[in-house]
Image (cartoon, rainbow, N blue to C red; front, side, top):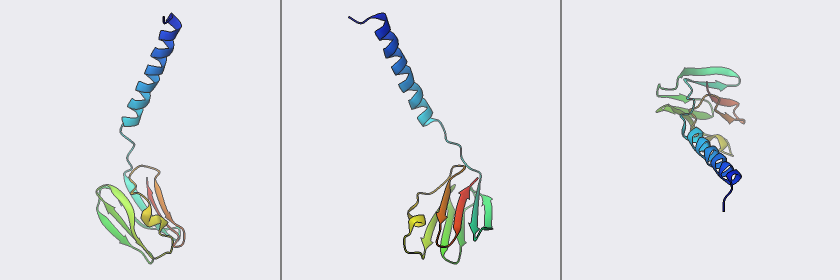
Amino acid sequence: MLKKGDYIVFATVAAVILLSTLVWFLPKKSGRTVTVREHNKVVYSAPLAVNHTVKLEGNTVVIRNGKAYVKWANCRNQICVHHVPIDEAGDTILCLPHEVSVTVE
């Protein structure tokens, strides 16, 4: 037989699971601006909603459909190219060999 304490523990665990699930599906904070820097100088900054392609010396950054990503880089490791597209405030893609950063603010 279950005791009163068992029901309290069960209800608490169920509430934690429910709240965790709700938090997981809440809309994430979306960034409004994307800034592209090369050698620590801003080369492009605009709303994330504006589709644009930024061609740099060693990289091509694409802003499309509210997301930004590095489409092409002539560096050996291609880490920035394989990074998932970014769209949330605080997200950043770095290309260290070319000193390029793409940041959503």
